[in-house]
Image 1 (cartoon, rainbow, N blue to C red):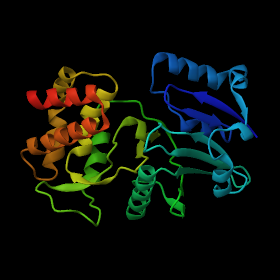
Image 2: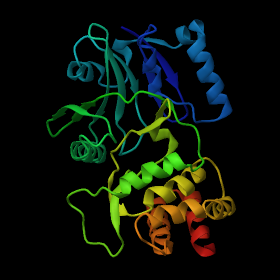
Image 3: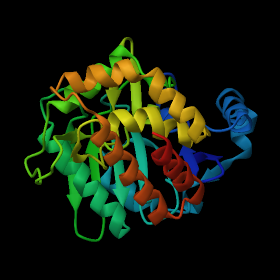
Length: 301
């Protein structure tokens, strides 16, 4: 089979030839990058000759393609996101079974940290079953050396807004009412936290917003995802600490409304927990610039 390779600065994506029914397979990539990357993606999507220039036979793919396809549903068409290189790297997939007109999502991991994250996502998806917050877990294969699991596909288009809204707040409040079973003792009130509550992990279908990619989910103090959405997503997109301090003031009504839902009058300890946790995390990852921003925010709130 032939695939079309779309390469970004950090990773590669591979797409099979699609028709109108399987066009959604291109959804394994969302163009959040630079203007140059977005223009390249538009050309890749719309011009056959651009895709033809990146054509590659399955025998030349630089990942365990055949092993993964043997674990996927039979006769499936699959697109691949090879993931960001590092110890958390995993391969994400969208799939389509033409004979059954069915779609699915899947992940494959072989690195230790990536396997741990996948196993956590499997656990969370099982606990969220029936709550209409997450995809349905369909199949799991874990032999110790590799972890592969399949879920239902969350339909919808990429969510591109970085502004807090009533709809986003409602989702956060819904998560705030859930706790995983193994909640540890904490001085602050805790709830289920997605852990990467950002637009790139949201899909919008009509007026409904759904969350995907639950691998980092666990119990955390209330407000963690709220502050992640307000602060971290903007830092990732290039905002500085001064802009973040403005955003915290602009969104104070939303912040108060969220914590009032849980009868908490002083949200400052929860904000401090988020900031100190993220500062530690960014330092451990070696993200000097991001760590500096969190340090400055802590000094100025």
